[in-house]
Length: 169
Ligand code: FES
Ligand code: FES
Image (tube, rainbow, N blue to C red; front, side):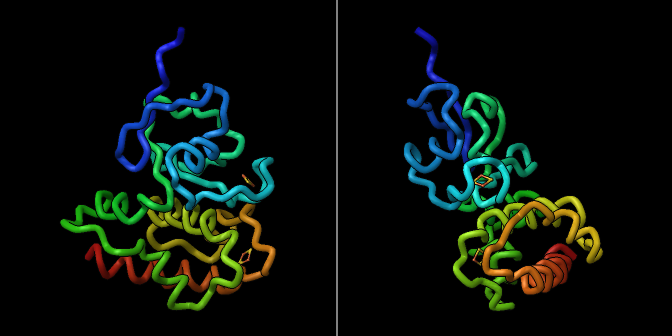
């Protein structure tokens, strides 16, 4: 019998009880009770199930859990802690700057897409702290919002960039 698969999510080790080809999203929600990542299309096309793997956004609905063995998975629930680590802050903020900016810009409507929007924007800002509008549009392309909040998401990412630059100066 195969040894159980071990993964690391939000810096916590986890022994997977599902089969190796189970989508990571199902392990996160059904085994680990982490509900930040959401099931949308199930086809890798909408982004609502996004998580970070070694700091890079992936679609957890089409990623077998075995693909993240030995890698570091961060979900929405672990994002503020990751942000603190990346910026050498002594304490994690309650929310990642992009989460706070979405609140400040009153950007959220139904909220279904926001896990993916937040995960992708956090990846962008970690690599490009002051992105241009075109860099934001390019990064967020492929994250679908059925409520059409794209202009407010753009404003929120710009705001988060300004907030983060103050924190890290
Ligand atoms: S649910 Fe994974 S990309 Fe849509
Ligand atoms: S806010 Fe409803 S899907 Fe984006």
